Amino acid sequence: MTTLKKKLSSLAVAAAMAGLAQSAGAGGFAIGTQSGSGTGNAFSGGAAGAEDASVAWSNPAAMMALPAGKQFTAAGHFLRPSFKFSNTGSTGPFFAAPGDGGDGGSWAVVPNLFFTTDINPQWRFGIAVNAPFGLSTEYDTGWRGQLTALKSAIKSVNINPSLAYKVSNTVAIGAGINVQKLDAELSGFAGSAAAGVLTLNADDIGYGANLGLLVQATPSTRFGVSYRSSIKYDLEGTAGFSGTAGALLGSSVRADLRVPESASASFFTAVSPNWELMGDITWTGWSRVQQLDVIRTTDRLLPGGAAGTTLTSLAFRWDDTWRFGLGANYKINGQTKIRFGVAFDQTPTNDATRTPRLPDQDRTWLAFGVQHKVSKAGVLEVGYAHEFVRDASVNVPVPGFTTCAAGCLTGRFEDKADIISVQYSHSF
Image 1 (cartoon, rainbow, N blue to C red):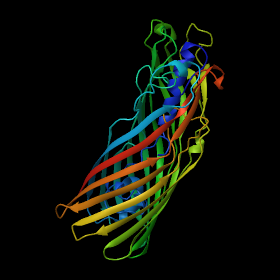
Image 2: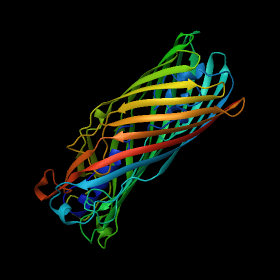
Image 3: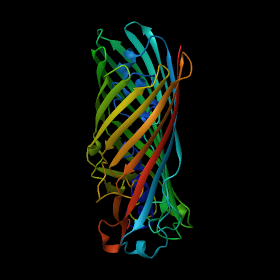
Image 4: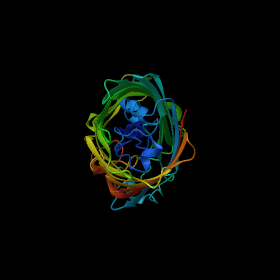
């Protein structure tokens, strides 16, 4: 997950490693769609919500606010991001190449599974299986920015068992552990026909924890706080080249990556028999992502190719972010509820270090959804959200350079995203 160095192997491996780092971590490289019921409210009030088993992820303490018994929830999210580049003055090798890469985004499907159950009146167990991080961008072969990115595909799977404890009639606490696997496939043109296209594959399993608190302030109002720890990855993988010199350039590599911690504070209140309001503030410590060093783990018969040497270093210089959300529900009758939501989500990226692998920018969410009770025990949710994303500028030097002396990919991305969520919950 990084970017470049000097000569062929350094150029390509570094470029691919840059993309991997930028794909591992909402804003940034996190996936915010973690429940179908949350989509219609733009994921506002998540730490105080208690409508289905997805609270096993958003706030384990909120499991105590669910009805007694067992709860099962399954959700599928259909994501369609769009990243369209426009050249505004690229120089060097980025100037002559034809084409702006097409749309770097495409459809993706993100599944979630949640389950909660009583242990006794004071204890409850839950488990979440989801995908907290991910990214998929792919540009046309031969486009002007192929030295910086062709394909970036990041996938994660997280298993999060948790426990909740009822401290009193108004206070509950919760805690969980997270076992998370991260896989990445990244590619980019290495700069010559002899090197061809570099494809990097890397993965690791990381471990973390999460905590939660829920306070039922009044019969109609509750407050929630949740915290999720950072997770450290010791990434290991291989870098292979498709060209005739690929056997000489390929290498095993490793890189240390730590994704950030986050904390949320939420409220939920029923202001009338028909209306419910909710809100959320979330902080994410993206400033942890400052620099990524890529290290060789096998010897190559090239200058600087000894195992243990630094292949390249990538400066991200990311900042902490804030997310603000506000949502409302309107109950049409005892079976049907309409959801609304808006949110503002900051990006951790900046104009100095942003790349086509993740052309992220600040985004505003507009969402709505419908909940319908299809039976006494079954609830169906459908939600839609559109993300209005600011144009993202890039000014990326030729791999191996820190300035535009040899040329820069200069332009802007027009970004947007659509989310469609379908969820079914069942109580038994």
